[in-house]
Amino acid sequence: MENLRLHFSNRQLPDRPLPMGVHRVVREAAGTVGVGDSVQGALLAQICVDQRGMWLQVANGMRGVHINGRPVKRMSLLRAGDAVYVDGVELLLRAAHEGVDAVPPADPATAEDPRVVLRGIGGEHHGRSFPLCRTCTVGRARDATLRIDDPAFAERHAQLELRGDRVLLRDMGSAEGSLVNGMPVRDALLKAGDQVVFDGRHRFVVEVPWLPHSMVEPLMAEPVEAPPAEPVQRPLSQSARRWPWLLLAALLMAGALSALLLFGAR
Image (spheres, rainbow, N blue to C red):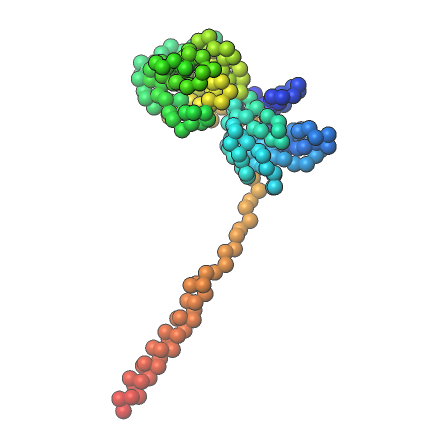
């Protein structure tokens, strides 16, 4: 998440940096959506960033908040490349990605490792995983490794090839290229945790099992501490309330039975 920033997709505004901290998303008096502590208005949501990651908190009573087209009621984790819809405005989370200036050579030790996968997190392949141990072709063609069944999708959109602990993405002549961590690209070098989007809605994340997803430097020195949760006092159940009375009744019955046996024999 290096150089993490917020991009307003449908407004001509410069990208807003997202350093570590809490970033308020508000509806200003003019009806526009603003981000930052200095912006005044009704709170819609908060984007929180710390060393543990990034997440979205939705304000109480706020409806219509979506992440990648999925509704969010209270809270959701975020990753670079996610599209957040708030009050009719799309906010795209962007982060830096590696270029192809220095592509590492193929590593025979990992060239056929089926654990390196491209996992679907949106679109028709949501929940599916595609091993990258062999060259993976993305497209509409029937022989494509990752087939997108859409007449508007290119027959040969892109190609992915494993290079050690990186994945080389090459464009194959698509109309608009792809998105990597929210940035439009033709070619890129993907690492663990990077999000790649084809045609705006087919979302995948690169998973390299022997590397953590957070292969990033801390965004700032101090983490953001969440407020401590207030302890919840649970009322005693009926069975718990009956236990003292049942114990007392058992003791009384035991005493009466002992007295009967002791004095009744005389």
